[in-house]
Image (cartoon, rainbow, N blue to C red; front, top):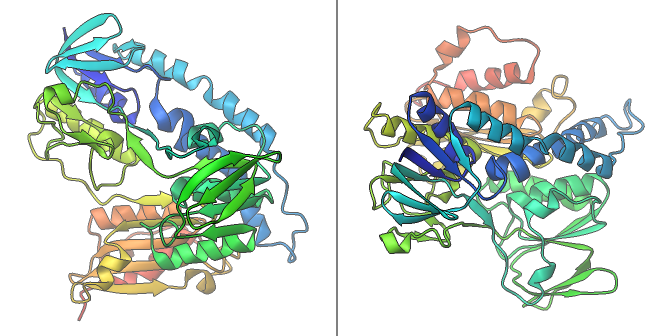
Length: 449
């Protein structure tokens, strides 16, 4: 008999599992895939490692013709070998960490039998609480030729970068992968059903990115629905219902993600779920109150991100330990697209603020043009601050290579409701990009007249 059984071993599960085990609870983690889940093994961790040298090339390109003749070449094959060698030990290391923490790790996919029972292969396990952190997987179009489509997991293992990458969908995954391909001088074609790329992000900054990618060899086709893929002598042909036909040598299906709810026993227990996720209450409980859900498997509007999953995992652990009975309350969540350059946003969006001018002030800062001497010649950097009527920072949108650093700093300011006076009373390193960011923000943090 266990105190808690986790279905899944990613960030949505293991953070809380370690806390509970340290508190003396008997914990088991079940996962039939590699230990650590998507992010650690074939998601954001792998992507950011591969992205590293591209950031440097992108930066050197801005000095080309001034003091740099050759911005540098990237050997994708060697980079991929490095990536595989670096991450290969992770599942073993995490399995060892679970064992060291006193957690039983079972390499089986769990299925709910009743409110307290899980089937794991030929074992039947019982627990007071069960946490479902089963995550999501790549969606796949159900079209003729779907066997020729590849998802993000496969792309992050490719030995050679394709000469012509066809991306079905222009969301986060395809835009990030395409940024690398374009830097290598490859051709990229996007086929997107929606009217624009990165629909959840500020249109102005997305348009800036699309223009840059187009100048580097990308083609964007919007309002197009893919209806089939065919193998050709040279590669593959992708066709749409409007008659568009594009040939390339690799087809990435980046049309979204779906929750791994199949054969979990949810329907038999009356737990509501769909491709979007499993329905929970404000304590992350299903309709069966001792069964929780964490991470991307939740049907939610909060961004499905690794740090969100970790936050939820820790929240559930505190609930089980009786440390809190409060409903979950999410802080402002930063959201970052790792394109070249980055796009980031947090809190109240630009569109939301513009729709409520009596509540918010929208301030656009041409940051790159103001601070070339400290911004590494990144002249197209832009920032948008959302100031509420009380004078606090309520949201922000950023476009630039350092947007990840900036958005984390602004997250602190938003969540702590820091004032201009508080920032003035601190001393920051100079000259840095963060220092200049603070300088643009301080004068705005005051009541709107």
